[in-house]
Image (cartoon, rainbow, N blue to C red; front, side):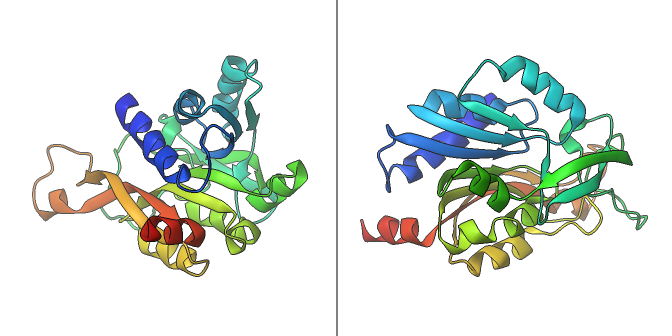
Length: 244
């Protein structure tokens, strides 16, 4: 897992280097901070990064704050990224990495997530938009936007329409689903379609999970694509990439 995170950061760094000197200050948004592994490798890879991170889960946030509060390069906000400012119900379970603004499906069909990874509501969290948070801090452009929000990636992008319309986010790295693990959760094709409206184009797909998590399950469901990581790039970066 560590090697995979490091590899993702390196790919993003190589893409960003096409449009700027990577020794310059790099602005990174870490949506879904959790344990901070992604930000940790960003700090190692870039010369002088500024990281604005978001973590809605109260326990994960407190742990992150204690661990990284002394690092001036990282600001961690105890909030979820969404399409509008406000409050929302947050669904939590025994596997904190699967906590989400979305509940689990209630259709009675076999899930594509571990049976033990159930979620329960009842926790209220603050929701902020990326446009608002960046405007408040005077951030006009973002080099790398990482979103791992357990189904909330499209909502977070909808809250960044001003930045996207300006092509102000160079590289977007996000987790996307091929099957619904959460109720009303968007799939990859919906995120892709949304980003195309802002002239963002697909660059790469990686860390593909195929099949359900129950190893004893047999049949065609073992061949179903589950989720993956996807990289999209801005139109200015696409032009440089394809002109070089």
